[in-house]
Length: 247
Image (cartoon, rainbow, N blue to C red; front, side):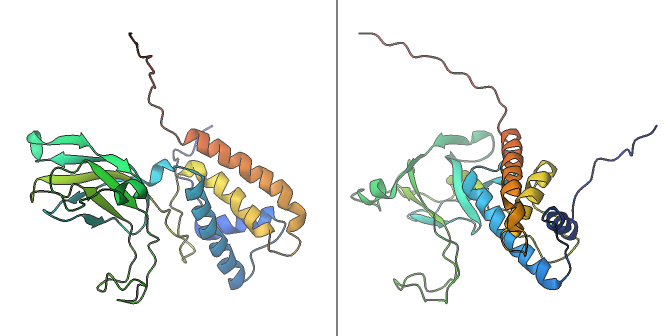
């Protein structure tokens, strides 16, 4: 007996939605069925971002720092930053130095936010990423762009150009479901059972006759998510050493 020799099985958007409808005891029949399923799928991936860290959405980025500049925009699809350092110089001379994350309360109490030096603290301003008319923000600021981007505010602000770089690891949003039938989803293959189970549960809440199965589908969704989340984790060794205290 021979095997296929491949390990590339995936579900495109149409097949994923069809599987979810079948678990609800229904069939994908109309363009509206496809549209409502895509809407539920997008809402579900947003829910996943609220559940915790999805390792496949972690990306590294960097921002060159400018002398005297306090605030710097992050990519608009940034959910949060997980780690961050200040890098000095480049190449073999570069050094990464820890920068401490502070709250808005702490940042607000800094007396001189324009003080210059090597940045040692950062406040991450988690804006919505929403769009608005140019110059249309309620406070009248930012008149040249139409995106409320998340950003960072560093302190002290840099005291020189082309020397400091803010290096970060961010968690980004999961990409949208898409509109094409052959589109595959922005997830690892191991999350496919979870995505199908979750979409089936979401659809059961709104298609005729689906509520009869919603309880069972919710249990299946929770179980599949737990299995996938338990696997999607850091597997490096953790070593904890007790401190010694002397009097």
